[in-house]
Image 1 (spheres, rainbow, N blue to C red):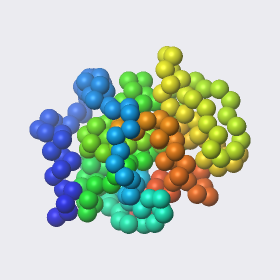
Image 2: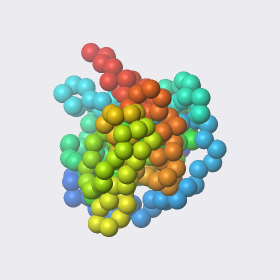
Image 3: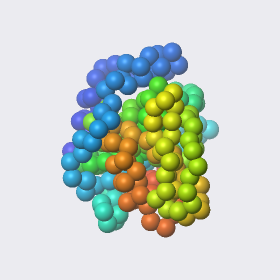
Image 4: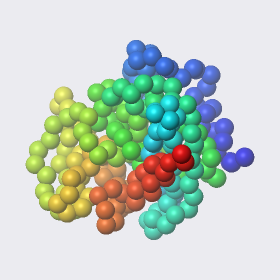
Length: 230
């Protein structure tokens, strides 16, 4: 049994996982105040990418986590978990569809990562509680939202070079940033998850990005989550 098993699920307690939309929204409103928006990271030596795929016409959730060394970005370990899909596809509530399997995959690691790069939104969310925030609060692990598309917000122009960014705004608040991770390719939407400031989130995403649009953490996790066992 891994050293991680049990630590993460203890933070959920005995509360049943929601299966209805109103209950899920209520939970987001209750937990959003637990998100830490400032840096509370220790030394980051193990950075993890997380991604989710689906099998059996969406009835099975396939969650992958891949841990790389930082800053070398060398493979350390990976884990995969399949769980029944218990929540419908609802924009803004994707964490309730994906987190049960993601927690199961994290529990299979030899020890928790120091930082999570999640395939999804963090604060760039209508209730400021996207997947990266939710997973960060449940596990206590610093987390960052790395999304390929926008859920909410407006922004100004973005420069063409790697490292260029512009703020993403909603209701007068900065909720994230568009970040160019490769010259003249589509940007990523980066937002805070938990225990990470926005400036630090951008810095880590760029540090984990090499020749491609996506950070290496995301690329490894996506490949593992997308592999079919059919």
